[in-house]
Length: 145
Image 1 (tube, rainbow, N blue to C red):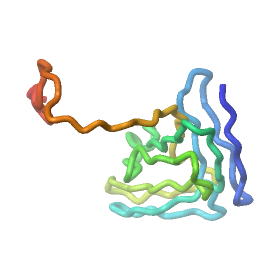
Image 2: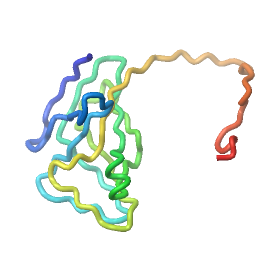
Image 3: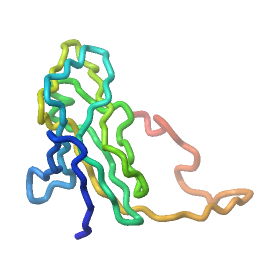
Image 4: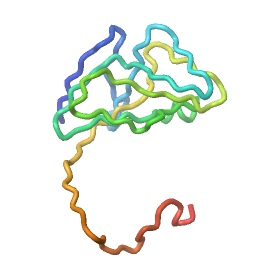
């Protein structure tokens, strides 16, 4: 287990919480004090009221909540968003209402989930050609799906 330092930058902020013992994601809560109306087709930047300090070699991935997507057609525009280890600003979520109905973000709404993931530094080496595989350069839709 790693430690992630967290600072509340807004009074209404809540500490992220896993909803089950084996959940990979920690739910992020909105820190608004009044209702926020997210109209159909609208995008808004929603505050969580927290800032975090990650250990070197880790990132925080901000992902949509499946319940909001299936029940209310609410998603994250840049999913997954990445919080880098050297970022110290407030964690915010770009919510998008792709449904036909307006959505109300009440105070303390669970708006996203945050997954802490390890990553590696990479040294890219330029070469003339890559090794061959059975798939080759088959990309989007190459398996007919």
